[in-house]
Length: 75
Image 1 (tube, rainbow, N blue to C red):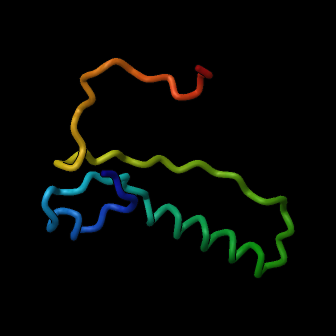
Image 2 (tube, helix red, strand yellow):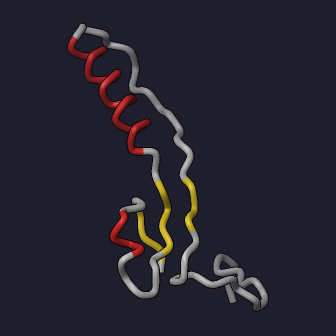
């Protein structure tokens, strides 16, 4: 099992839940900057940005030891 957002309570469950930690401070900073620009009549095109997440592996996720499966190829 894998969850989004690395909350403390994911380590209160058994097994501990693996998460995809997202940079919420970066999201907030970007959203605030975009809001302030709009409030100051900045009519620039929509901004596209990329933020990097961190995979936090805990007990709910184990290493896969079999052969990779190509789910995109037709049978």
